[in-house]
Amino acid sequence: MATDNANLPLLPFEKKLIHVQRQIAELEADQETSDRDFSATIQKLREEEVAILTETYDNLTAWETVQVARHPARPLGMDYVDRIVKNFFELHGDRRFADDLAMRCGLGQVGTEKVVLIVQHKGHDTKDKIACNFGCAHPEGYRKALRAMKLAEKFSLPVVALIDTQGAYPGIGSEERGVAEAIARNLLEMSRLKTPIVCIVIGEGGSGGALGIGVGDCVAMLQFAYYSVISPEGCASILWKTGEKAPEAAEALKLTSGHLKEFGVIDDIITEPLGGAHRRPADAATQVERYITRTVRQLKRQPIDKLLADRYQRWRKLGKVLHLDASPDQ
Image (cartoon, rainbow, N blue to C red; front, side, top):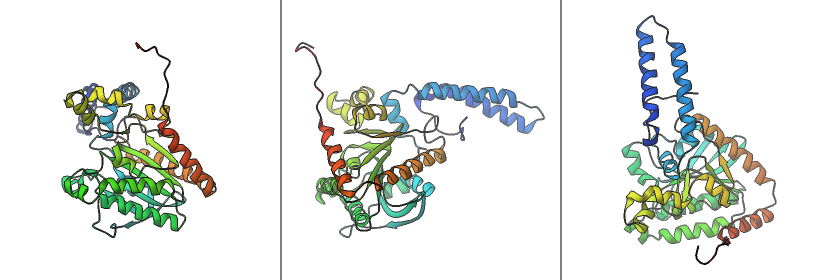
């Protein structure tokens, strides 16, 4: 099917779509102002548009995947909450310093399952982005998340974490208030939290900022999200001393959902609509809702002791080293 919104910003690798979408728009406008019927031609152009999208998105490079994950119209954390969570009741503050709007926490119902949600949110317009610090949480954000998770454990509610951040905020105030300790504390507490945890990377999964709410029994990614120890630009600036090498860095980091599923870093890939979640947000939300409902239901069937043992083993094996059969000269 064609896109719902032909006015969506096109990414650099989508230039082939410009001519087709312009033709469709012109014919539709002409059809509205005249008695001529261009429906057959429009239909053929829409089929061509779908063919271009299919070919393009079936062959994305790692860097192009990063660009899709950062698309300005891509659904954000609270967009999914608005679409799939019933009776969402937000919890505010870490009871120490402040209420970090980059990290949104609350109780709600997804499908038939009552859960506690931990959601990283970047913000839409400029005012919202500034309030949310562009999705980069301070230590109080991670402490608020831990407070919500402890509440989930107390009332035997599963935890669902939606991850979308470039990383935790590295500013002076954040460091002074102990952002590294806050993330480390979350890693420890999530590893032994006595309730099911489902983590989904919906956009950017950047460094410890993502991992701070990413220790779960099942970790999934949307098809065109990415998950990495560092951003491609950051990696390029360290290795090559220039951000222009970001495409090479993205490829080397193996940060796509396909790579990470192959390596066992994630458990599942949630399929996105053709052309990415930004083209059909409602369809993307439905896929996420189905995954959460199905996975939470499966995890709830397991005894807590087995759940914790399996969680421990899952994360222990992530450090496994692959020994390659190669000569010293290779």
